[in-house]
Length: 128
Image (cartoon, rainbow, N blue to C red; front, side, top):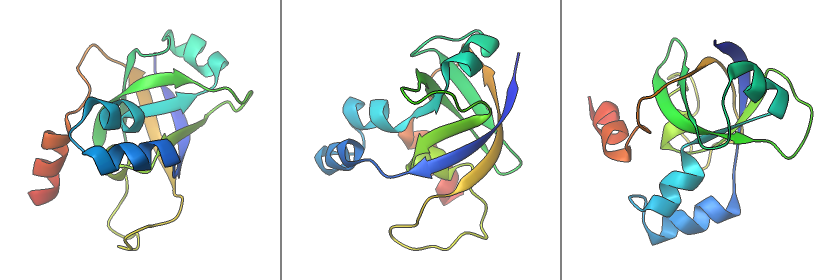
């Protein structure tokens, strides 16, 4: 099962603080490599908190953890913290500011057994 969603990116103070400790830390990855969906969307996909989803569009793809939203309902609307993971889904036409604003990204999500995309892999993709 898969679903088409519109992803809204946002900033998060806890993720910002974790990034100051190091972008290679488990804490930073756990806060950054996730997608927030409403509970009904998660049930339709057959996933629970922490299970992995492949998020892909014409620009790129990443594997992140699913997280149930505390704000209900918002079907077909997902949220990702602005991070190297969400940036893999953003096209080149976006402004290259140091602190870009929120983005709306169209993508498809599907359950996967693949591991969370590692930040080292994301950095290799950006260098290519």
